[in-house]
Length: 97
Image 1: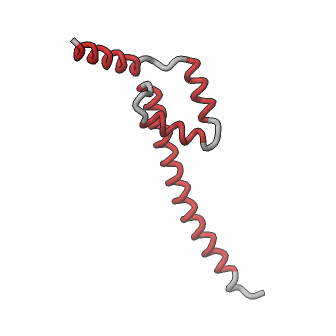
Image 2 (image 1 turned 90 degrees about the vertical axis):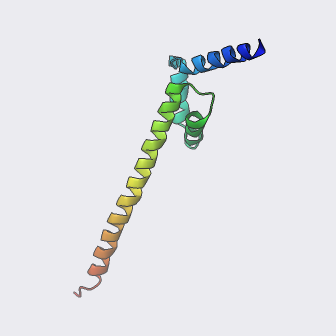
Image 3 (image 1 turned 60 degrees about the horizontal axis):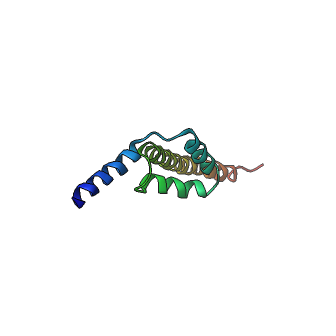
């Protein structure tokens, strides 16, 4: 009998996570994502925490993925344009007036 109750409770827990995120919850989510450092911490909690609604968890995972893509692109462009700038400045030193 107790095992049956646990299964129902687990089903209710899973059903709760499948519910859509309310307007109020989204407003709080967006507000927290606007605060530096708090946003990164909360995105990791929402993405990988076990008690987060599925839609919010997917949103957090997508946000973290976009952030990672942005960081990789930033580093790539910084290296490429930094190397071009350094090469250009070193060429300027070879000219005499």
